Image (cartoon, rainbow, N blue to C red; front, top):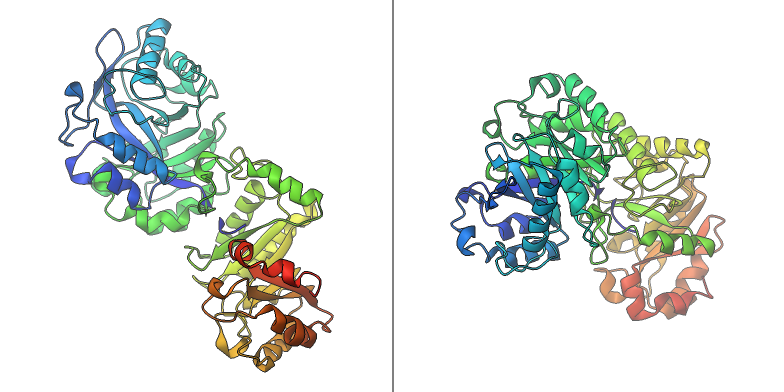
Length: 505
């Protein structure tokens, strides 16, 4: 299973004509959740008013229905789109529990899975509702949350409380335990925001993570001018704040106010939020991959080990320090291994270990990550460690990590590297590299990593007859020989490579 990020970046869109279209916001690749802001007036008998300030559409005359295609485009990319209620300057109020139910019905029929002749955003079905309640009344928001979850179809609930705990407006609603995302606003609130020191913020964060909610997001201004106070420069966020909070099982990522002000902030921090990419299979950011849990357990019942591979050729990853490595290890333990988290991307199944497919970033601190992960084996279930280095010896990225002797399996990539791969009947370069790997690495088993088809790699494909007659006889006598690793299942389905070599490996 390739590439580990379960957290994401969310952003508010809708309050400035200078922020670009909703479709462009989603196609940037920077966000996993977008909040359309705001339904600024509703409740207490008044006609609900959608205010998309500056976007040149008039909801009252169905002038914003063209956004439907943008919303669908976002959702097709796995991005959740929610409607945000309230805002700092809206006119909204719930007068009773019945009023809350009436508002819920309006939201269901006009924005969610219900039906109405006058849907302001067209026929697109939004994924949920965000409570950005900063005025009006503190009452009946819990009733609204309950009503929204009672329509027989999943409605994601989000909230954006201020960081003083508990929140004065939606504290009662959050106590229902119905909210999937809680984006705490750590700005415009000096007692609990970053102010040259992260201590107050971390203290407040620890309070917020005690609430019964799916994921907690760190809400920040995307630029100094986006808020009166609380802006955190990206380098400070990455070095001082995120390392202190990312190990929380409820950490969901970073929320930004707003798209208008995000002129590079999300791009600068994107690699700091763990993300799993199962391209084309499911959306981990909305817990859409939890169904894989039964598949994982089915594999394990057959004696097949299932690992999570971190990195990849196109990933964005690096470790900044030994402490950063420790935080990543804790995250992996809680979210994929035998630890506990309320938002395990692959569900309750416990993976057998972690694979290091490191092909970029820095070569530093992967040895620290290996040590921290291996230490979790003392808590019960063995954490298997594997790595997929390139065949030039020693590997530039995980060479130091492999020296720890903590790795069970090492599948050396004998492809895309002409100096040490098989080429046109010549096995000498591969055999020489194989002897280096098996002689100098303190690992249990070394695997021959190969492309499963000629188009699976730029070079290094070995035809089945050549593998059987020339390559395997040259390496199988090694007591560290573990077998063959193939890239990847997609190409193996087309070529049948594994079936052809199974009895010879």
